[in-house]
Length: 440
Ligand code: ASP
Ligand code: MG
Image 1 (cartoon, rainbow, N blue to C red):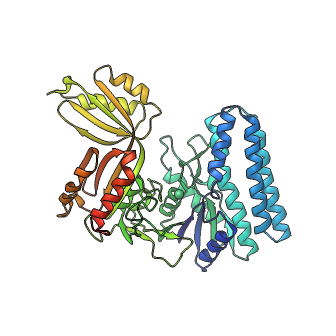
Image 2 (cartoon, helix red, strand yellow):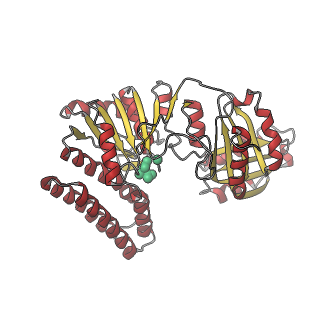
Image 3 (cartoon, rainbow, N blue to C red):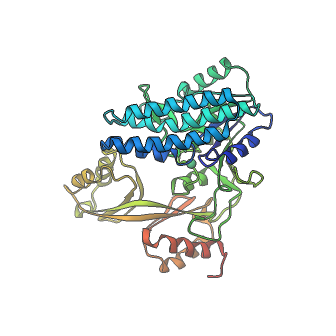
């Protein structure tokens, strides 16, 4: 069986939903994972924030605005009158619930419930649309099988058992539609797999059913060799290894949720990135195979904070790093890059929620400097660290204001820390140099 995930843009307009219908209508049995229609999750986050800050009028206004866009979509998309009544009353019931909770006290659980509505809406609307078009599709509620454990990791045993049970219990169908992103937590509350998590849903399901392939359909032809928003001369990469894709997804290539390849990598289930707006384009195929070596792609991740921890006590001492890392662990903050000298450590984080607590604890034994507005530029390729062309890279670094370099942490990745204000220039310079698209 195949698992196909369609992102917000793919279900964001009637024209695109029709494209998706044509893509999935090939007679093959498949699971289709859907995101919320584009803009919906952001709108729901805004609504939840209004409730948090007790801006009830504002929340109600946003809810009714969003409701109107759904009314228009349903009106245009569903012509069959029985189905139209059914879908409209479902949509109304969701918005009635949202209006009612606008008066509730805010809690993270309430926020999770609110943001979950986007995927519930898109899947009901789309599955009824398929029914109208005569396709044999069936809705598979994600909350009946998708669950994370107390460490927020997918509860694979539970997912496999319940997914297979549901498929066996449901009437035979060609297409099973389910919600991306949403899940239950270990206590049975509605939770989610973090923003962009529908990609992750697709590979978790792919692993649970031993899929032949997982396809992630978006609005771009796969991973590009550089960020197309900032660099004009980019192209899609046809093949990536799981390791390369994982590094790129983590270090900023927005196209894929960072954890996407994890569930399927060891099972060697291929992940294919495809473009809904151009289904015949090759896209990017991610497998265990290594297709070429050397620098294959450049990506950048913003919102990075650098922390320099300096202490003379570090000199010839052991246990210093442990002490530092324990503080980050205690405050559940992941470290991205790290370099050390004999008396200082520089590291970066992208989650600053607990930064002041971390700094207070570090200052008990070290001098601490914090610098925000940094970006990590990451160069990815199989074995780039050993590639004969890579050392030449350092020739151009004299033109780039690099604050920190991580070389050799993995043989597939070289990371540079720069000021975010230098990012676009750095990406363009590296592009010219690395891919030789324009003579330097
Ligand atoms: N709708 C969710 C989001 O916008 C999940 C997803 O699109 O993957 O983050
Ligand atoms: Mg996405």
